Image (tube, rainbow, N blue to C red; front, side, top):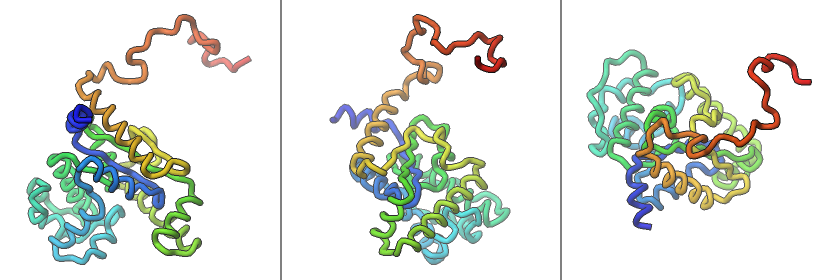
Length: 252
């Protein structure tokens, strides 16, 4: 166990993308607790709001939306807690770009501190090039997500469905507008977990295991990564193999 911990400690962060109502937020909280890492979730919005003197509702209204927060969030970046090192503010253009830049700096500052679990906020794209970050996505069938939201938030079925649709739509629009990516693109993640059958604790187990396994590959040269690593050539050509000159011909 200590050896696993030492290996995992080389990783800086985990990003959790989630469909609303899939239990992704709860999984992130449990994962952070198991690892002893800091959870970067809704608390970041609250912290920024408190430091900037705006209401939590005002800050939350713009989080994960294309529209930006008031310009104060950029000009007051230095007021964010010292555990989140950030660079000096950049020139303000529009509210949208200001909040996008502020959020990016908070996320990068959190990763610089290390050992954090970041929920949403486009972190799977912002940190995509870092091999010391694990990216996971949590999904579930719509009917089960509706049941989750009904049970957790005390809503009726119709209201829960509408809330899920609105939250998912906002997250999709945000990632597309800011990063030209779609959150359902599996290539953005190291692991996609479906909680339709798996319980939340099992999902935590899988992400924890993926974190440990990715950590063991940190020192592996990029050229030695990929599904072919360690595999020999097939002894014979696959049965459906077609010569290059025949690839443009329709199958018989």
